[in-house]
Every structure is written in structure tokens, then in C-alpha cells.
Length: 212
Length: 199
Image (spheres, rainbow over the protein chains, first blue to last red):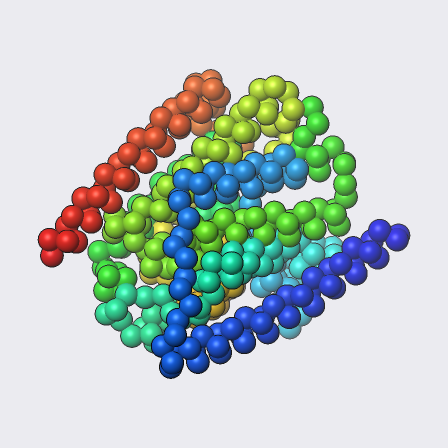
């Protein structure tokens, strides 16, 4: 099929662009660190009005419903990448694991050739684009003034682990369940959303040193 | 009925991947504009100092919900062909609680961590590694939690089904609730700002 070949070309092209992008990103990071020494910062623009942003995000979500018949997601892409990784390192093991084997399927299509994987590549690109236009691609570490960077990194990893596990258990994360299922009025998604806020607020007091 | 286009075979799987990339760009762009590439802004939601998360999320939900409601009402969008995940109520609530804790500890959710990564935040890299590890752990433990994972299956159930209300009524109530939440958020931010000044 000519079309399939064309698509594969495009996929390859996208792959190259992503690699190029990370190189640019690395260079910018270096520049920013240089600037810090001479203390000549580029002024970052303030974030946009949250209601306008929400409206725009809602339209993107609506477009996904109308064009694809499905919503947005993020954690599913990580599952595909993990499956790909495990399958590459230990294929026999991956196929014997009930969870990975559903992602591998009959093995004719790579787990990376997945809707959410491509969507997340777009997210990375779109976030970078927006950040560039607003002078906000600056690197750094997001934390409150009272914690050390190393502590922040450890907490980021622990939080991410909980997030990955929780998202698998709930069949989706903030994008796939709360946002998508929320707009479609799914019962489980709304229960999930309330639970996320409950979990966050329950621990917020104990985590205050990290953020405030 | 013309939509969803993909379900009416207007294009194939390979084209859908390109569409995924384009939609993803819009998604990532919006998240960054909203300030969601910053863990401090996301965490501020849980200290009532900056309620952007709630404002952006609920505005997006209401916008998409109204769009879906209208398009299905005029017969353009076949809602039965739009994927709504089945409800497994207990695992979803437990998963939500774990995820919420992960949120305040880690500072991101999966989608926002990719935006933070693309704008150069180093902590986002550790977070993404964590998510990857968490998914791996889940797959490892899957044989032991499979029964729980599939428990309390309620099928494809929506709020209108569950409460026995009409679709339009629930849409109306969600809009009301969102407007109430926005008013409360604006008020909360003002109170917290004053508190901050007096310190």
C-alpha cells in the first residue's frame, strides 16, 4: 500500500523531529544556565486566563470526540512504552504476563503504534511550542523554597510511582478519566475525580514543606 | 449522523495517528498556557492559593460536555459510538485516592508532567520515570489484583443513568455546579491573598 508507506515515512520524519527537538531543548537549557550567571533573564510572560484556557482545552477535547469518537489520555501511552520496553528486553516474559500480553496483542503491530503514544508526542511538542512563544522554556526545578532539590527529585519519583499505579487501577488518569469521562458524564469518572481531589487534600498538609 | 468521523470510516488507523499528534499539540499547548507545566501552580490548588486547576478543568469539562450534548441533540454526533469507559466503582475510587496522593507528593499528573518535561523542568523527568515504574509494578502485581481490578463492574453507566435524570437535566446541574465552584474559587483566592498579606 502506497498510503501505508507514506504514513511510515511521516512517522519516521516525526521521530527525527522529536530527536532534533530534544537537542534544541538541551541547548536552550545550557543557554539559560549561562544567563543565570550573568543574571540577564528573559522575562517570561504570565500564564493565560484560566477560563479561556479551559474553553480552548474543551474545544480540543470536543474535537477528539467528534473526529475520533474517543477522548484524551496520557497514562495509556506510558503503558505502551513500558510494554514495548519489557517486550524488547524479555519477550517471553512479557508475553507470559497477563497485563503486558493484552498490550502486545498478536504481535503484528508494535505497542508504540498506538493512538495515545502519538497524542503524547503531540503534547510534548505542543507544550514546548507554547512555552517557547511565551519565554517559559527555562528549565529549573519546581519546588518550594524550603526543600532541597534532591528531596524534590525523590518525592517526584515516589509521587510518579503512585500516580502510575493508581492510574492503571482506575483505568485512566486525570486526562483519560477526569477530563474525558467527566465531559461524557461517566459515573466512574466522576467518582474518580472526587477521589483524586480527596486524596490530594488529605495529604496536602503533610506535604506543605515541599511546596510552600 | 456524521460523527465520530473515525467510526464512520472516513479515514483509517494510520491517518488517526497523525490526527492524534495534532490533537496532542492542542492539548499540550493548552496545558502549558494554563500554567500546568509548573508543579508549584498545580500543587497550589491543594492549598487554596491558586485555583487554576479547578477553573481550567471545569471550564474544559463544561465546554466539551455542552458541545457533545448539542451535537448529539441535533443528530450530528452518535454518542453511542463515543467511547465511555465502563465503571468499576471501587477500583476507580481507590485508584483515584492513590493518584490524588501521588499528585500532591509528585506535583504532576502524567499529562502535565510531559508538558513540564518539554519546558525543561528537571523534576518532571523523575516524575515520568516514577510513572513508568508504577505502571511496571502494576503489571507485576496484576495476577494478585486482577480480581479486585475487575470487581464492582457496573458497565457503561453515566450520571443520567445512575440518578434517573434526563441527559439535559444533568448537563444543566453540572453547569450550575461549575459556576458555583468558580465563584467559590475566586472568593477563596481573595481570602488566601489577604491572609498572605497579613502574615
